[in-house]
Length: 562
Image (cartoon, rainbow, N blue to C red; front, side, top):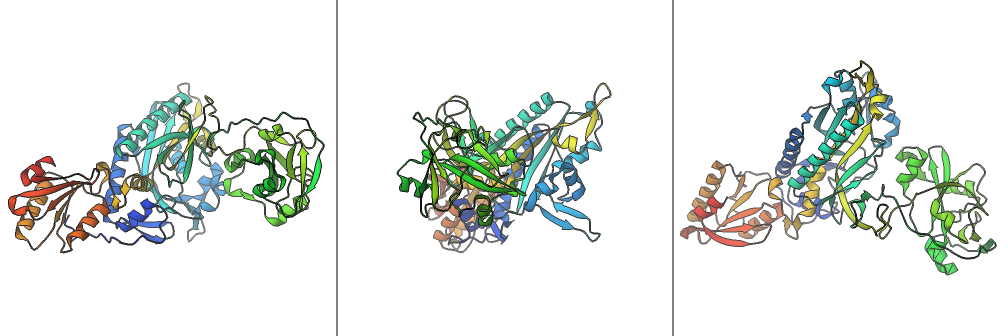
């Protein structure tokens, strides 16, 4: 490709809407453009890199025995009603009606569609196992799209679904996909971790996430260097000690004027935050619930959602009116004693071990001191409602946990029979008895993976593509297109590499050398051949974008190396 013909609208300034380096660079390098909030178009260079990732995914999926299909992005409401997810998925689902007033959605995922397909086509155990996949555009109406391709309203995903006769078969399929995913992300050059994940609205059983590490990632993971434990912060079990050995004191109400937050209260009373217990009020659908956790910790809302059995969008912090109705006090003074009758009180188990704790008094400008669980209040005790944090004990081996940030690029779910039972998808076993398919589900964000690669491979000058996913492998830069020797050698190298099947760009533009070099580094082509002042001698410069190494070579030697 000649750069005089290439549509590559690079930008010198950092776009104001771009929050993280990878998003900034994809925009600056002319790889993508925003059409609307959370909606992006791929330009030629970006789409070439995208297709490289897509091809890697296809090769590994095909190699693992999966078969590619293509399903519609438009899905009828009826199937989602059968699975119970039409309302559960909530406001993230794009809904629409046709001219006959029939309701559809733009698919955020495809479990229902694949299950319905198979139940109408497979009827015998002899046809199992089978794994079907597609690479398809998905749609989710994100409340706050951010980070470019990482959290967008429209994205491209590879999703696969395995159908087995029993759990043992499903686990085998699950491991095959796990292994394929590791090969895919290794080929893309990603530094990643596999962690336990929360299945969310997809399934009720085990799941794992493949997280590309990045300081700008929107996911947080906890992992142990002493064993193989790793999990997202949403999934991780929180283990830490609460030790108080002191005499139980009489409960006492204290005046705490306009002292509402944990920070304000610890300063006012001169105590540590671990002596306090927060009482948080939530609206879960139509119900208001109170949740107690230690004052020095944060609530894991995902764990609370699972406990309550509600959809994530149905759980919101109670508003001021709700708080005042339930506590008869202003916001900031909620506590477990004297809540409105009938309010469900959920207590993290660690709270029951805090002796002489401080809690809100359900009275404006007052708190209660020396409160003890069992003597002064009781509730529904839950083993773990907390968000994990650095230094907590590993639930497997007890060593301190480390924390890291990253971007989820892939996930695998053990769906079991959740969807096959809901849609009554069955096959006949060897005894002629109907059985429900045991399913697995496997997703990779193709567009997400593209940006995750850029997040790990860049410097202050631009992108540094790994060779496997680079839009082109080589750029031949003619320093001065008015110089016949340079043009002749540049053309010779370009044509020779093209004939040998090397993906090569020829920078034949009339721009200044500095502009050409900056663009080459910005778009991240792994190798650059500079045809400059030594062209009459048959000498060119080879620049390695990864190492920064520059060497001079004869033209034939440069071509031979490629």
